[in-house]
Image (cartoon, rainbow, N blue to C red; front, side):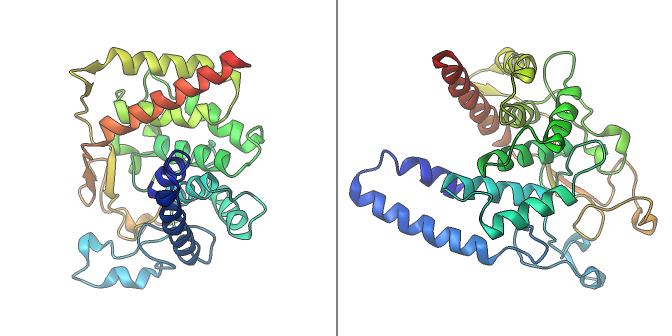
Length: 283
């Protein structure tokens, strides 16, 4: 986020501040490259911290001492790198894109490690791929966009229950929320296809309709601290049934209501829709 913000502020900053911004962004980008894991992805805190034996330490925080690379963090890093000019011809970007597509689900979506859940992961990937110049008419991208569009609720918004971390039938299903509606809009708008204009505008109408007292209310938890898997990463149920010591209630999980999600993600989505509509009118 810091790199994204600074890369935009630099364009309007005075010359003395611009030099400081360039210095800070250059340091941040070097750090990001150094933190890329060997499989091409990025994690939230560590590099290559994915050895399951560490989860056996009895005093671990929720048993979640591991921090394996995740698709959503990797996608956010790509979006940041794209904002400062890195594209598909960079080796680190290529490795990250390969990691992302290895992790794509059969239905076209992506798992969300730090936000609930597949709506978050899919939106992050579409934004990251577009930022580094990946062709958004690629069949894998279109499959993801189709999945995202298909999960729109009749009221025009999007929502997903935390139960989707344990029940695949709940993927992309749940009452509409401001943050998850915003994520879906951000994902679809980055596909740059007129096919999804209706979905995007319906989502915008939902956000406008549910905007009260200057912001949005969100009672549902849309942030994920720990899914409760014990290993910190996406698990495949059929291959790892021994890990399933919880049900849809997520008795081992730790979900978070990040209070700012309901504020800044809808604002970000509406801002990008505004620029998108302005570009469309000019063309």
